[in-house]
Length: 64
Image 1 (cartoon, one colour):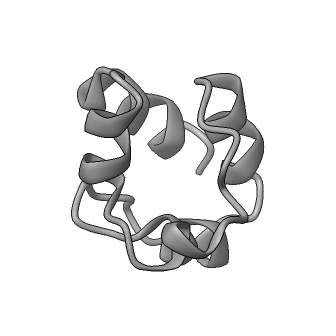
Image 2 (image 1 turned 135 degrees about the vertical axis):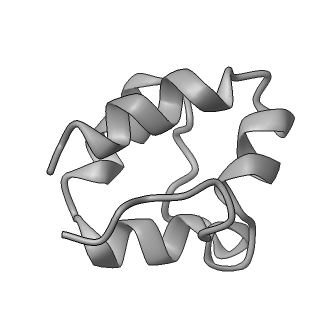
């Protein structure tokens, strides 16, 4: 599986690994299906939601 990076969009991440949607929602990012998610990078979304990007990346990449 492709490694998830902070520069990937939410949409890309979910296409790479559909299980990532559940992890994102667990972290409080409930808008994984919204139109913004298709263009917003993981880093941008984490900033908007006040999340620690490094913890989020670890969790997402642990799904592999």
